[in-house]
Image 1 (tube, rainbow, N blue to C red):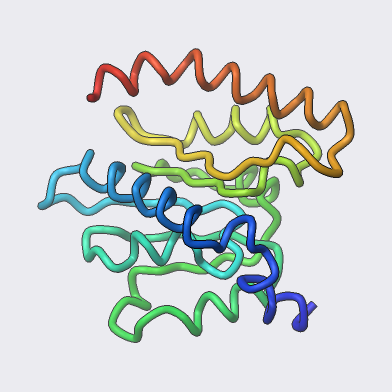
Image 2: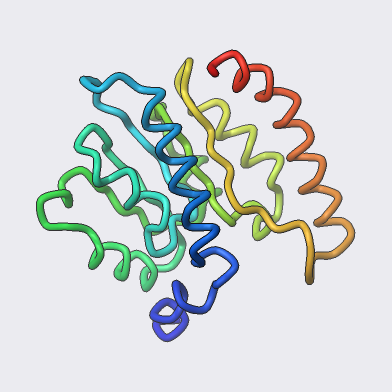
Length: 178
């Protein structure tokens, strides 16, 4: 709802606090530095909400963002945060992640999904589709996935398995890049 969207950034202190903000910015800076300074970079932000991840990239003129969220209210707040001079580099799409991934044929240099997987019915399929859309030598950024609290045992198990699989697959690549 419009009311929920208005308070989202202030309500979710587990995401929007000084410590998490610092960690997220560290991750974004690391990812930005993986790409040449003279290259245009396409980023897909799935479940973008009010723009927490996308806006951190949009301040760098190399980045062209496709931001997907199912809530028109969240996208409106996101759009209001985008600077006028950056709006042409930011495409906002109001669809479910599943719909977007099913219809999309583009590839991206970076695919980000932050605090979203635990909301999805089939997170494995989402990750599988994401991996097919990321370009060679691209980056998949999965951030802030809680595996505690109100989640069912099945949800916790799924998230833990996803994280373990991704850790095994990407940890070697991550360490090679360092």
